[in-house]
Length: 341
Image (cartoon, rainbow, N blue to C red; front, side):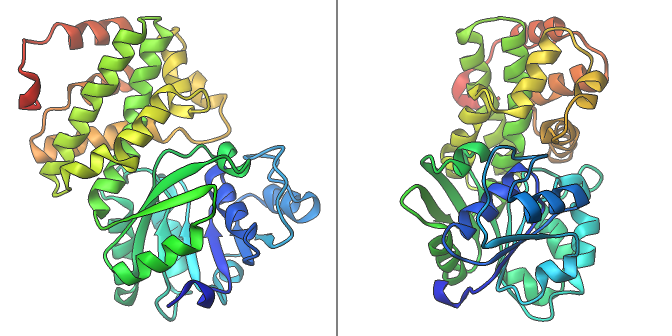
């Protein structure tokens, strides 16, 4: 397979990120079909070339079409990008499975962990898709706000997969002067980095909402990275992955960037708002809320201590005050930093 052999791409999921990726590829004159769950989104893209619900104000090229039909989106596609929220990944993949008679590259752009099973998205894909698809599964992750990608602002991401030849092809498919992609083979590490950084962004938002200062936020990000590495290594990931784009890169962006939904939720929690009211006011999904439960479940399963994740869960689901959670983190017994504990 070569880049020139990819004549049509399907993007499954028309949230901000899925739409931004579809726009990026369509801007390279590649025909792209974008599947949206919401009929309103399809109508807006087809009539006004804009996803007014999830990516307002961004003009979409004529090479990008939208549909509510999964079969129409997948039919004739040479590559599939999967960008639906993690909590609906399994049922959508179940519907896609019957539509893939032959293997094609399938790239997960979903940053989350399935809450009930604690499966990473590629593990859900392996459960739901025929065996001939398993070797072509990949993950695209890294520091990337959808609005900035849509403006053509410089962005660098990581693409992980087991088949180096296919990874190289898809790497070339995405590359432009403003969109750089690095190849990797650590599917576990890249996915964990993309998922866990959302939980840390909630915590960083709480720190900012409480106005605890830059020192506290820097410490939170650093210790959050330690927890991510600890769990990743326990699950078989390469520790070095977490010091790359899909780890520390995405962590810094999501914990500090004003466009981060998860950070914004944390800020509002720190200011005293209740979680249910915050979520009710949001159109888009804040993956970190669901991922927090899954991350704690993985930590317990792997016997890994993740105190920040534990306190985030206590704030989100046990009505613990943000100030008490911060206090309990600060007053833990003294540790040695290099022990990663």
